[in-house]
Amino acid sequence: MSRFENVIAAIIGLISIPVMLLNFGGAIIGGIWLAILGNWGLLGLGLFSSSFRHLASALPLCRGSCSPHRALLLWRKADM
Image (tube, rainbow, N blue to C red; front, side, top):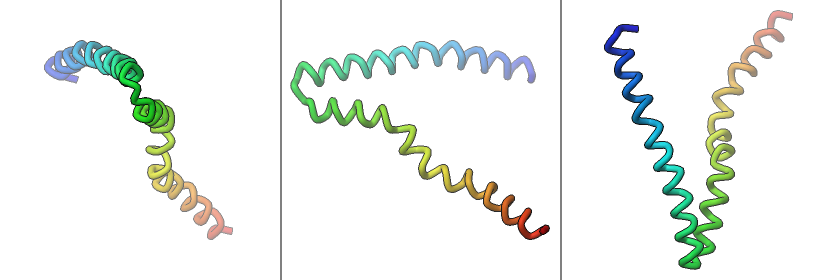
C-alpha cells in the first residue's frame, strides 16, 4: 500500500466510528419514539426486520454459494 492509501484508510476508519454510533443511536431513539407514539405495528416490524435481515439476505446468496459445491460433486462423480 502506498502512503496515500494508508491515509485514506485511516480517514475512513476515523469517520466510520461516529457514523456507526449515530446509526445505532438513531435506531434506539426511533424505537423509543415509536413506542411513545403507540405505533406498535411499526415497532414490531422494525424489530422483526432487524432480527431476520440476515436470513433474508442469505437466502438469495445461497444459490451462488452452493453452485460450486454441486459442481465439485458432479466433477468427482464424473471421474469415477
